Image (cartoon, rainbow, N blue to C red):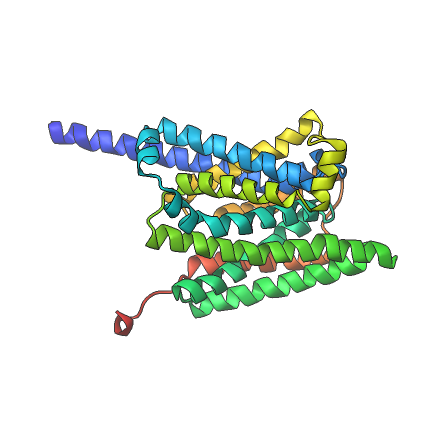
Length: 325
């Protein structure tokens, strides 16, 4: 009887965990899919990029601290934390992510939501490249094919955006230099930062929530230091920190911060391929509903390539051969 009760108890716990995972997956899919649209609609052109990135990083710190406290590990984390360990594990990735986030904020404003979301997936390619360089993590033949499909999709989208956004050269240049280039550079930086975080997690054994806090704080310090000479710094001193903000500006900022926490929760229990593919479809649907804008021909050609690429990449990971063991 006791064993049957224990079995039922374990079964109910597994069922609750599965329901929670599906809830996290659903929330992350909606957040990931809606984020480009939220940023485009609620962050006005006048908003100073540095202010929105700083606010997002502060929101991440608050969320991560809350979750550590909820787990009852706040005192333990505080006692074990060292400045040297924090700078070694989180210093460089934090600076890279701060620059990446600034580039993404610029790109959000100058690309349609679906194009942005698909171009942003090129970070898979750069993550694979940098994890191989830093951690010698190999890719399967299928994954290499998937990465090439992703590159083809990115080229299609770039050509499409360059040719379809009006005939004026100035408009095309705006899309290229303030839309496509920033998101692609951000993807390179994301791949490098992700690889450095993976290195810190594997080699330095750094906890994910603690790393989120450290990177957000270091990122804020880097951004604040940059304001002494940057155009954004001059704009803040001239117009004030909240120039161009409305109450709605907080929506994409909080959404982005919560999404960062959800990524950590989902990664523990399930892969991210389902989320990315579903989110691309959500982005396309929301863009059509709220902006009345159907996907372009280039987007329709690139979307199945991106979905297939992500599916193959997640489905066929590299397996170590017996001779390599």
